[in-house]
Length: 459
Image (tube, rainbow, N blue to C red):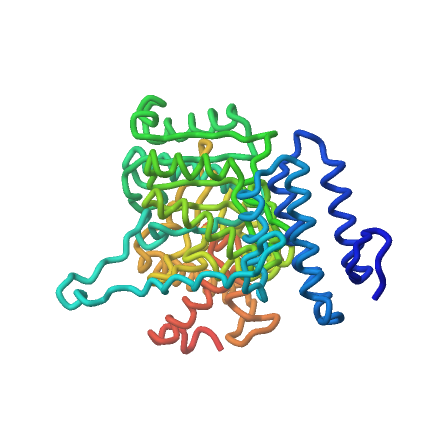
């Protein structure tokens, strides 16, 4: 240990601590008058406490003296930039207490007092549950989007996520159907950081035409639009401690959620509003927690639009980054194109909306939609709510194709391989028109075997 020249004092401190102290002294002394000096002091205190804990493992004998030097230095820096003594002590103490090994409240040139004991844990009072009705799960969209939760809506760029989400918001405010379901009526907010207001205008024009209403009806129902195109749309950033913190924009949105009480809040898109790391589990969880807070305050739901990574597209997970994007939300759905067995799109206007997760019930059936008149609407014969009719259609197509292949002397089999019947049939035009995949045709084949309709026809 040496008396470091960068920070001359009577007490010897390590060179590393002296450098850290000198660095923050220089940073604050050279900061502009417009700088946020309270935040600078917090950052300096946090950095110094971390450096001090590391230094303690090497030079435990000088810890107390170095600790007091750090407190005095931070106090002097606070005075230099005009922060009053009470605010300075609060900032320095808060930074100190945020460190895992912190147990004391810091006071300049004074004794160290023990920190106050933690408040008791807020255990749930279950004493009257025997006398209360069991609460039912509440939904913004039945069996698809739970209330008071953040939901993830992913899909490749250009798939139609924003259009579909805007359509859902309109369904809420008008009390009209959305893709075969009835959303809970109520106000809605749509925040679009990807497109300007004129894009929202012509997308909504298609929606008003579909529902045969006017824009005045949407306004009267409580639809609120925000375009942050070309602006800073970040709702959360990450500080030097790895903690995700809300921005002023988030606080504005939180206030709007409390004032308007929207049943639905759609946000496009994750890459625009989240400044953290998408592969950091803790940061992802914290960000989803902030969005869930919006949903709780509104007593509605928040749908965050996102884009999958290349890996997420290939493995069909529909996510990007950490698996915590799947784990943190209580429900999520994925909009994707429909492709043939060789990976080629069957029809550029067709999409499949796949419900990947529902924490509070069985995942809803996938829906096949077609782009028509500016909207994505259920495809007749594919997206019927009557699943039995859909499965019956798949069996009919399977039998028709089997008969044609037989007439053409084209052999098919039940075992996976080059002659596997479901895979070959899925490539035919009859199956493509209905969006029947190899998986759907395989299910049809197994049901036909169970019904003893294929015993002699296929082998």
